[in-house]
Length: 486
Ligand SMILES: Nc1ncnc2c1ncn2[C@@H]1O[C@H](COP(=O)(O)OP(=O)(O)OP(=O)(O)O)[C@@H](O)[C@H]1O
Ligand SMILES: [Mg+2]
Image (cartoon, rainbow, N blue to C red; front, top):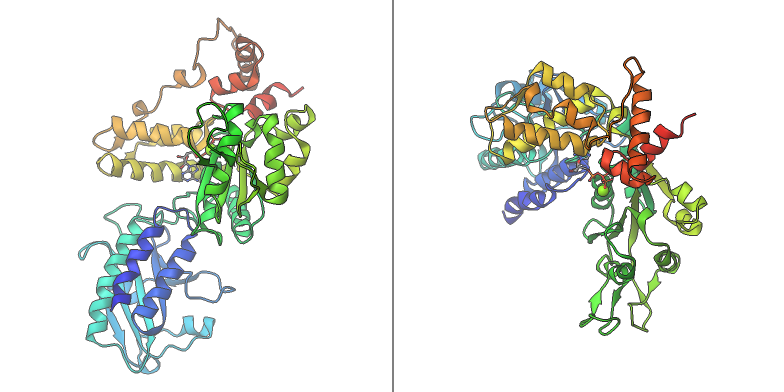
């Protein structure tokens, strides 16, 4: 009984995290099977886009997703009719469809299946079924429990990225394999594959990509899907640290280590013991501090500032940068040995435009749901013109820029109808600052206009490309790419 109640409490703790959704559902099924004293539990989801049932859990790893039309077999019937069903002898029951058993090699004897919904009278999101109860068929008490648990699972789903596209319609929308991370483009599939491989090891990963592409989000995904998931995830933002404070921030200090150090403070490395340390914008780490970090990466040891004791910490290192680190190495701003130590696995996060317009639309709909919920606004509808504008935009600020656009549109459209007029006007996009009178003749190709504009901004910033990139809302690498084509 206690088992039955604790089931969803534990799942709820995973919901704000970027966990692998298959793993989350599998864990739900594992616990459900134990709580119901049955051999196995399976969760089928209604795929809102394809209108059929799909399951990936409780299958053999080598069996890909299994699909079944609505209305066929027990799960299909439960999904179509929305009523619980119980089978006491599968082999003699004509309603039972044995094709899943045939494909997986499993033998179903008894079965109980309930529709998954968020509310008793809500649309069906999926079907949860438990198979082969220990010592005899399922009984009425089991039916009551499964009904209650199915409602709770419906609630859990509605809080993940695997939720309904439209609350009043049946089914869920598959937005990507990780909770809270939206993306089904081929460009992102390659990223997911690396994340899962990296998560299975303690290897260092360097995440690269333009600003706003999701580097921080993906770094957390590596952590929460790794063996260290129960340990801390500690971030050090290397941009905000003045050189003198970097080492204290990383390694801590003893009392009296420097003026103002009136108590002993542990560093981030110590706080991350047993977990993951994420060095964000690692390319900005001052050269003076790179040596100490290197020593820690080589030997796992360090000293607090002003301390003599050599300490150890067990941390997994992830790092991110949007700088051209190779250039920094060539120009002596970044230590080559450190560069190689950080870059064991490299993960290039694609720009939003490289993910394609369908992905932009998927993300826009996802953010619309998130912000409609946060600001208590009705379900969002995008006008055709508004969606076309989103799909066409170049997204120099990547996913973060899209997130901000949708947030402001949701606020500006209290009835939920997002029109073109709710999106930022085009003039604010390309003229974040006055251009000091840059003039371009009509008829130039857009790429050339872009090149001249970026050049003018770099001049305006006295040749400082980083500053120009910041003002243009694009990555420094992008500035380089635009200017350095011959
Ligand atoms: N695939 C995604 N699905 C959902 N949200 C995303 C996705 N990618 C990014 N975001 C959201 O976009 C915002 C920017 O992402 P994030 O901070 O991870 O980018 P970043 O690459 O670390 O940016 P920076 O280079 O500026 O540090 C965050 O709010 C993040 O949650
Ligand atoms: Mg970041």
